[in-house]
Length: 153
Length: 168
Image (cartoon, rainbow over all chains, first blue to last red; front, side, top):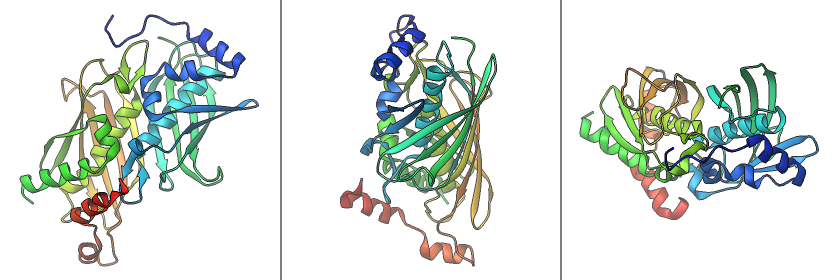
């Protein structure tokens, strides 16, 4: 095992403990890239809203300034993975198959939110739609859809 | 445009993008046809702690940046081109502890839109880990095309000036 991998972990157990304590820090901190972006999650009843706080290290357009489109996409992709882990009983980190994003508005230098909708969960593949917004949910800055493989570690 | 001029433009463009500096992106190669950027492997971009494989988001950032800056290869003057959309298909997982190279070209340029395509690979360009298409909007456009574009396009000096002004 390389120095960059963790010993095998029981993800389902981590997810269950997070739900029970309403504290998702341990789940979020498992993934270095999620920490790099500063991803957080807020549970609102049965819904989960994901957030990245405004961070100078995420800027990709110095003129506006605006968040790098890749950061918005990475945030949305990771939100979809977390959503599958939290609500669909996916036992391992879902593997990305494809990802398609439409940028609707500039992602300004401020907090960004995302929520997910699973349109189809099969035995092997899940289809997830993700919406990202800043000021109001009705004016998304980006919409995306992704397929994940959910059946193997 | 000479290769050394477009190389200089690409490096200047890339150095102005803070998140790309955080990821350590560098210009690997550029000519009038295509651009190749390099994303070094690092622990901070690991997406799967069980395997050490980097996150798709880091590859999306690499490819969004590569496709976006590849517009330099085909535009006479520097223009900011925001991404309209981007699609990535993963052919195989990236291998841990290896750098990723992103290659992109503009295959159609219109007065308003630039269509780009590219791929990401690690050891062998003929075995890509991902294929990408992206569409970009031209902000320096005008009804007369290139003429209006030249007068309104943002110059790298202005971009640099804006950064020196403390906005980044």
